[in-house]
Image (tube, rainbow, N blue to C red; front, side, top):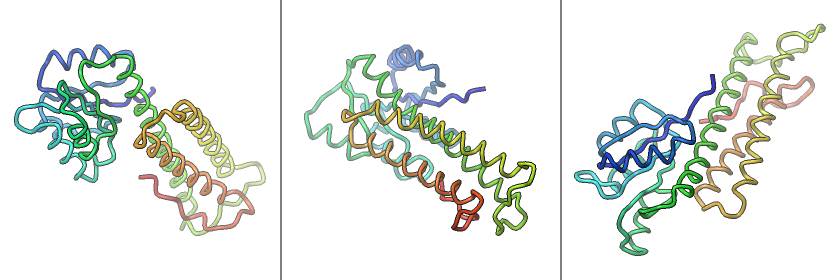
Length: 231
C-alpha cells in the first residue's frame, strides 16, 4: 500500500477549509483540518506533515505566532509553511511572513492551480525523504545483522543473503535518485530559495547514503559501520 502524505490545513473559517480541501483533493493525499493555531499545534504533536497551509488572520493565536511555535519545536521546525492571507499590507507584511519561517506567502483569492502545484512540490519532496529514511533503515538492519557490526559482510559463494540485500538496496536507492533528479529538473530555475534549499538537502542525503552503500561493496574501503544520519 502506497503511503500518503499528510497536509495540514489551518483556518478558522470552515468555508475556507472546504475550499482548500476541494482544491487539494486531486493530489490524493491525507488532508487534516485545524480551525485554530492551538489545534494545529496539537495535531503536530502526533502526526508528521509534508506541508502546512496556514491562514494569517485568526482570532487568538494568529498565523505568525503559530508559525513561531512550529519553528521552535525540533520535531516540526523543518515542515514547510505556506501562509495564506486575505489582506495585503505591502512588502513589510510579506517580509514578516518569511521571517516567521514561511516558504511561500499567497494572497487570497489565489489561483487554485498555482496553489495545488506548489503543494505538490512539497509533497513530492516529503515522499522522497520518506523513501530515503526507509533505505537507511534497511541499511542499518543489514549492518546490525552482521554480529558486532564491525566486520564487513563477505560475499557468499552462492550469492548469499548479504550481497543480495545490498543489490536490492542499491536498486531502490537508484530509483529514489532518479526521481529526485527528475524533481530537480522540474523545479528548474523557477524554484524559490526555500524550495531549492530543501531539494539540495535531499540530494546531499541521497549522496551520503550512496557513499555508505558503496563502502559495503566487497573490496571497498572505509568503515561499513558508519551510516550518515538521515534525520
